Length: 386
Image (cartoon, rainbow, N blue to C red; front, side):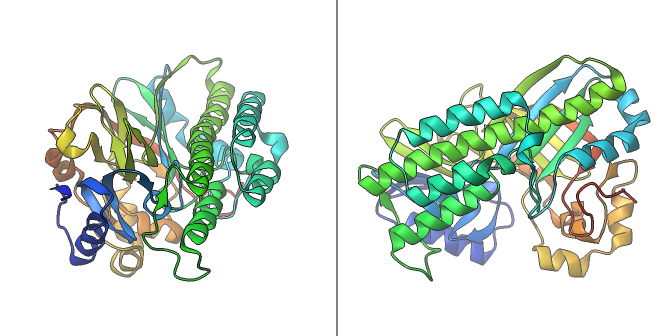
C-alpha cells in the first residue's frame, strides 16, 4: 500500500483527484504533496512519487529540468538600483524571453558551446530515438540561453547586503519535444497520450527515455548558466570585471534514481540533508535560499515556489493592471498585460508555504527583487521597455 504524505495548503478537489489517481498506481511506493501543490495535467504541480521499476514521462512533464539557479555577486545593491533601468534594457535585449523566442547559435558563448558538445556526444553514445537526436543536433543550440514564458524569470535581487542573480527556467523546446514523443511512444496513441503511462526502466524504451531525460536535465542546467553569463557580461560592461559565486543550480522537474527506486518530482525542490535550493515566491516577494533537512516524510523535497492560487485565466479576469502596478512599486520589471497572470496576487501566501515545510528546509536568506525580467506577449525580443 502506498505511503502518502500530504502538506498541501488550500487543497482543491481537482488537485486531490489528480494526486490520488497517481498514488493508486501499483508501482508507487510513497507519495508526497508539497505545500504549494495545485492542479497540472496528469500529476499535480508540487507532487513527489517514489516508484519501483517504472518511470512515467507525464509525471516529469513537458518542461524537463525546469529549475532554479542562484549566483552571488560582488556588486553593491545600491549601485544595482541606481542602474536598474539600464540593466533591465540591456539584459532584455540580449536574453531571448517569451514563447517562441530563441537564440542564434552564433550568440552562444564558447563555454556553453563546449558543454553542449560534450552533452550531445554523451547522449549520442547511448540508446536514442533518431528523430529526437536529429532535432537535438540541429535545433537544440538555439534554445540555449533562452528564458521561456509563464512563471520563468531572470531576476537581480538583494538580501540587503549582497546582490544576486536568480534564474527560473528549464530545457525549453527540448523538454516539450521529448515529453510529447515518449508519452506517445509508451501510450501507443496519437491522442489521449497525456495520462499515466509508465515505462519499465529495464526495457529498451525505458533505457532510451532515461538517456534523453538525462540529456534534458543537463541541458536545463547549462541553459540557465548561459543566461547567467550574458547577464554578468552586461553587468561587467557597467561596473567592470566581476567575481561571482555559483550558490546552486538545481532542477525541480525530474525523475532521478534513489537507490534502486526512482523519485519523480513535478515542481518540487530536492531537499536532501544540507542540500541547497531556491524557492521563488512571486515577482514582488522574491526568492528564498534554503538548505534541506533530509526529511524522508517529505520524500526529501520541498515546494518549488508559492504555488498558484488563481489560474492564469482567473488572474487575468480578477486582477486589474492598476493593482498589478501598485503591487510592484519600487521594482523595475516586465509589468504589462502580457504578465498580468504572473501578478503577486495570483500566488499563494509564501509565508504560509514556508511555514508548512519548516520540517523539510531551513531558510538561509530571503532575496528581494530589484529587477524582475520575464517574457511577455506584449513585448518583442529587444524591444524598448515602457
